[in-house]
Image 1 (tube, one colour):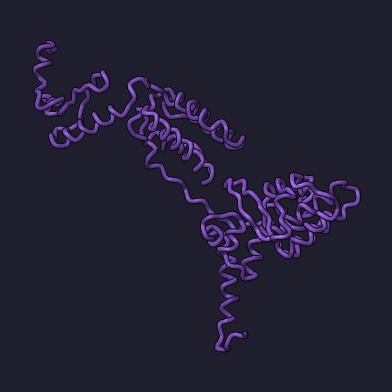
Image 2 (image 1 turned 60 degrees about the vertical axis):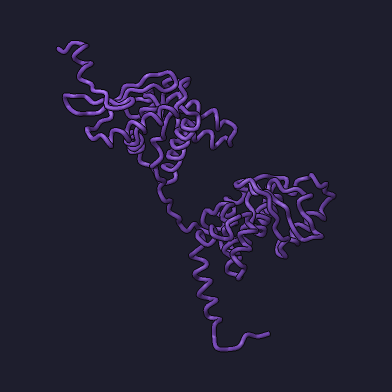
Length: 355
């Protein structure tokens, strides 16, 4: 066994913080950052590469807060969850579930120091499960957010999740009712004699289909949001947290004028007394022998019908509170726009346009 003196002499100082081990030619770094000394192998016998590795290691260690300690991955999960606790209950529940999985199923255990996590461990963790693109992407989002938070807090020098990629989600063509089906559903709900909420449910469903809005927007609508004189409705898209206006469509005005005529309505009073007509809607579909459409399908019906009527996609996107100029609608309803394009192509004849 070599004596301490012999072992010391085996290291040759070849530069500032830079050493070479005589017996195998490998380079080592010895440096101090924020009062802490590091002695690390540079894992190479190539001097130029060793110098680059040393520079990188000094930079990485200088970016870590020395007071952070050796925080574990499990502790990082707990720290992350405190930053999302004010989000929607469904979102918090999903992120809590994913963090619980990380803490219980992480390869090698979640008590590993966060700074020692490598990309292959993330890959091994995700490979344990069989799930679709949506669930996979939710896990990727949480893992990425956890390490980005740690990076911002100077708990780690770099994120092992930087190369994570989301899976492309398939876009199935969901069942959408025809406008005639929609009218049948409204009539079927309205005629139920022993249902005290039948009329309210029918009015609510009819509004969804004629306005092209979602259940959240409709349920929060007040009479102060409906401007009959200017012919518009001010609403709020809860999904994107943005306000926008839609025209008071001719097909919609009659319904709202009837509801207004049935009583005196204060500006702060809600237009509809119910917040959801899901049960009535499902029952009507079943009695009519129609597919099990959802209330959300009425928004798709509205958009499809607007495209088929020749309404500009950019205008439709504005009616939906989108800010992308129609890109989402073009991507989602490409099957409709292609069919519509073929119908419009038939108008391109040699005849001169009328008017």
